[in-house]
Amino acid sequence: MIRPIRNTDAGQIADIYNYYVEKTIVTFEEDAVTAEEMVRRIAEIIPAYPWFVYEDEGNILGYAYARRWKGRRGYRYSVETTVYLRNGFAGKGLGTMLYTELIGKLKEMEIHAAIGGIALPNEPSRRLHEKLGFQKVAEFKQVGLKFGNWIDVGYWELILSPQ
Image 1 (tube, rainbow, N blue to C red):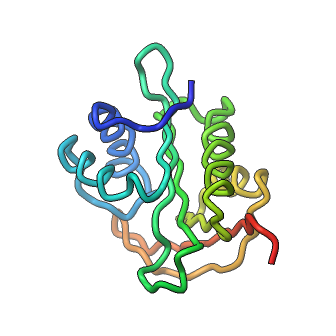
Image 2: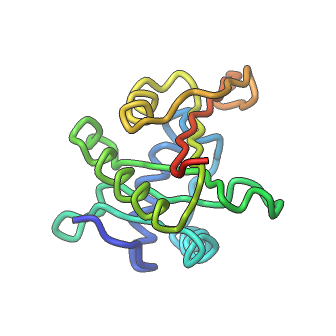
């Protein structure tokens, strides 16, 4: 079941995210995030932007949210989108369902552009974004450092409303 996030989800959200922090290049964060910090991050995003979770019998298996793209007022119709799945649950369609729900809500909010940043290489994330209509618009070389290696970052964009 997909539903809006609640503060009580913060512990499970932190657990999902911390796998990526500690084991992958997907995020450039280097220190595990506490449940308390995740509550703060949730409060920072909600109610301005949507954050959804996929829950199965009380277990959060993934989440997707949007946040402000940049601080200047002229960017107010653009958001950065994010999706994370619990380790072991990729390839089951959960990311597609979460992102589809998120994109639908963003359209209702009259958001014009959704932007997804992907640490490269990350073939599953690239495929997910392109499956949903995102197009690659940029790639920055060696802009993040993780586990002693320089990592490239690509950006995919989805225009949600006509010009």
